[in-house]
Amino acid sequence: AYLIFRVSCSHSVRLIRGPPSATDKTGQIVCYKPGQFMCSQHNAGCHLDKIPLGRYLYFTMIPESVKKTRNPEQTRADLLAAAYGEVLEYGFQAASLERILAKTSVSKGALYHHFGTKHELGLAVVEEVVGPQLAERWFEPLRRDGDPIAALTGILEEKIQSASEAIIRFGCPLNNLIQEMSPLDERFRSGLQNILDAWIKAMADALAAGQEAGKVRGDIPPQEAALFIVAAIEGCVGLGKNAQSVDAYQRCLRQLQLYVQSLAA
Image 1 (cartoon, helix red, strand yellow):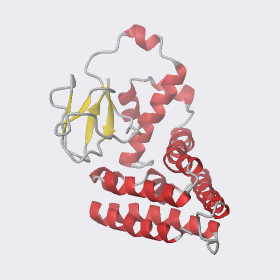
Image 2 (cartoon, rainbow, N blue to C red; image 1 turned 60 degrees about the horizontal axis):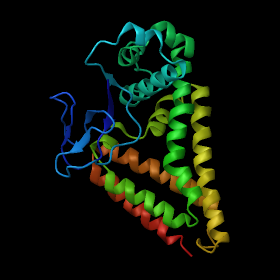
Image 3 (tube, rainbow, N blue to C red; image 1 turned 135 degrees about the horizontal axis):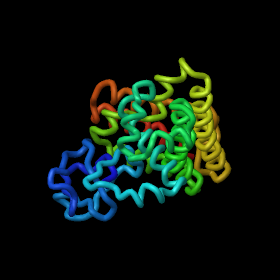
Image 4 (cartoon, rainbow, N blue to C red; image 1 turned 120 degrees about the horizontal axis):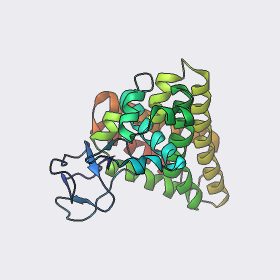
């Protein structure tokens, strides 16, 4: 089985021991098996997005014995990963349970054992995939670094340098679901708002701690600044996606980076 990842490297890629046709250009979707990805120009491992799209290609039949001994926790994780990829590509309303099942080789009975409805599966994706993904990418670096300005500048620089057609094609999963589902479903809206609130709080707390440490200007209201930064990040992704322009996305983030640097004491 080859898990599908997005490539952030600026070069074409090849797969060691992968399917002969599994080569693609940056920003596209390629097959990947841990330890088998190699950039055709670097001849070494290059950066891949950490979060898989959750699609699986099977080049051999799965033995019945493997199916029977499937670990329930792994089954749930596989379903969430596949559902995340499906929602990222098609949106929640157009997401297909049949495609999710095909990508995981999980039975329909097993799906409904873990998630009673498609709606419950979607809410679990928000809580168990989108939220933790954001926490790993944003909350933890802010909590670890004693200088929030340096931390935010570094995160934004990594986003600028690793920007590819993938981010323009798929956008931000959080923002996508906010636009699609918040007007339609209160449970989705509430779950997505909880993630936004946690993001803003993590950033505001980091800025407040930075003020106490003398790293952030004292005249900056942390909560308001955090609200603006989060809104600007999501706006940059949305702008780049609608314009289908990596350059627009990068230029927007660069201006946000300058604003963040202006907050330094």
